[in-house]
Image (cartoon, one colour):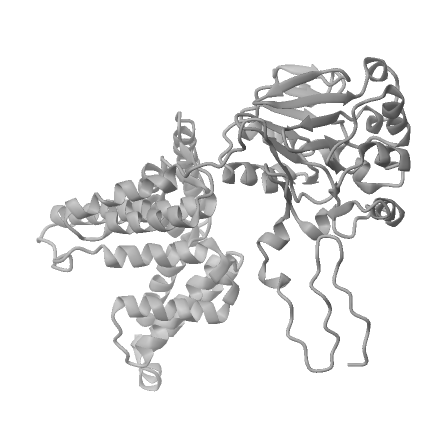
Length: 556
C-alpha cells in the first residue's frame, strides 16, 4: 500500500475547499486575494505538506508537480483542454525530475489518465437522472468502466516493465481503491483530531488484507511472461489502446491478437547439443545460469545483501522471468558460504525447483525443504539435450573429512558441441592440485575463475591444465577482499587469456554459438557514454571489460 497520486489529489481538493470556506470569513483577506485563487494555492501548499509527511516519494513529488501545474494554468486564466493540461503536467514533472522519464511509474501514471480521457464515450458528460439511485448507478458504472480501462489499457505496460500481469488486480482494486480512498484515508486524517478513528481505519485495513490474501491464494493470481522483443511490445501497446478506445467493437477486438505476442513472446533456446551460460552481475559472489534446449541449471545464487534483500530477489528472479524461465531443473549450490547460497531461500520460495545438488551438511536449513537432494560427488555425470555435465569435485572421502567449506566446492564441467565451461566454485590451490593428480578432464574453453580471483587459487599448473580462452571473475566493484588479485589477473594475461571482470563487464553471456558478450557493452547506459572533452584535454579511450578508462592527471 502506498500514498498514491489519487490520495494526494483528494487531499488537495479537500484542503482547497477548507481554505476557501475559511478565507471567505475574512473580508480583508477576500479583498486582498480572491477566494478561488487563495483556495487553489492553499490546496497546493497543504498537499505539498501532506506529501512531505508521507515520505516525499517520487510518485508524491510527481503528483504535487501536476497539481501545481494545473493550479498555475487556472491562475493565469488559461482554459486548456484536458489532454493539453495532462501534457503540461507531464512537462512540468519532467523539468522537475528528468530521470522520471526512465521510471515505469511515470508512464503508468500518465498513460492511465490519458487512457481514461481518450476512452471517454460521447455523451458521458450529460448530467445523470435525478434521484440518488440514478446517481449511485451512474457512479458505479463510471467506476467499473474506469477500472476496466485502467486494467486493460495498462496491461501491456505492466508486461513490458515487469514481465508480470495481475489476473486478480481488477477485483482487488474494485474493493481497495474506494475503501482506502474514501474511507481509510479520511479516517486516518480525521484521527489527528479524534484518535479512536485510527483504530477503525486499522480494522478496515486488516479486513482488506484478509481479502487481498484470499485473492493472492487463488490458483493463478499472476501471469508472467518473458521480456518481449521490440515488435511484440509495439504490437501489444497498440492492442491495449484499441481495446479501450471508444471504437466499434469489431475494431476493438482487433486488439486481442495484437496482445498475444506480448502475453507469450517467442523464446530463444539453444539448439540440441548446444548451451548458453549467463554469469549474472550480482556483486561479490557467484551465480551462473546454464541453459540447454530443454533444461535449466542454476549454479549458486549469489550473496545476501541485507537481512531483507539478496541476489535472487534483486537479480536472479527478474533475470529468470525476463528469460521466460518457469522452473529450475537443477539448483547446484557449490558450498555453504553466504556469497554463494545467500539467495537460495528466495529462489526456492519463488520458483519451482525440481532437484537440488549441494555439498551442504545434512542439517543445513536449505536441505530441509523436502526437495530431491543429491550430494555432489566426483564421477557424477548426466546428459541434457546433447550437452554433457560432469561433476569433478569433491570426492566422497573429501565430503567425510573435516575441511573448510571452500574445499568442498562442487566443480562442474559442461561440454557442448561447440564449447565447454568449467565452474570451479571456491576451490583453492590444494583442491586444484588434487584435480590434477586425479587426471580430471579440466580442459575447457571458458573458466569461472576459482574463488573470485583470490591469491589462494588459480595456480599456474591449474590454469595450464584448463587452458581456457576466456576466464570470468564474479567479484564486486572495489571488492573489500581485493578480488581479483592483481598478480592472479597478470597470471592469466601472461597466457593470452581474455580476463573478464563482472565489476567492469556486468553480466557476461556465453552464447550458444560460443561468443562472449558483456552486458555493459551490448546495452550501454547513459553514464557509460563517453564525455565531451574540451580542446587539448586528455581523451581517454573507451573502457572495456578488461581495461578501465585511464587518464593522467592534468592541471585543468
